[in-house]
Amino acid sequence: MAYISSLLTNLAISIHGKKGTKNTVPIDFMLDWDLEKVKEPKKQSVEEMKAILKEIADNQNRRYERQQKSAKLNLMNRPPRRFRQTNTPSL
Image 1: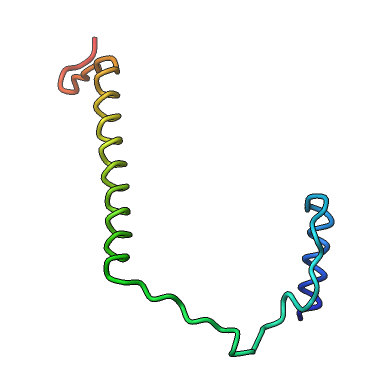
Image 2 (image 1 turned 60 degrees about the vertical axis):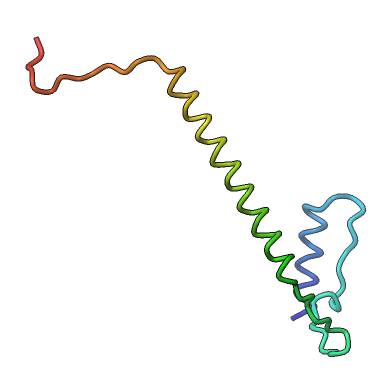
């Protein structure tokens, strides 16, 4: 399976890849079962989590403010709408 994956990837690289791109070898697609190489994920502190969520909220608030500001500008710059009268027959 790794050999086929490597072969297909190399074909795609040769057809669509940039010059100087290295070909793959089957070992690139094989699972590594060595448990000593497995690293435990870094645990985040509460302060780091708060900082990340605060950044996300600040970005969303800035985006919302920009959208509101652009919506106001769009309403101010557009020509007035024509009102249709649906109850009166047209002449």
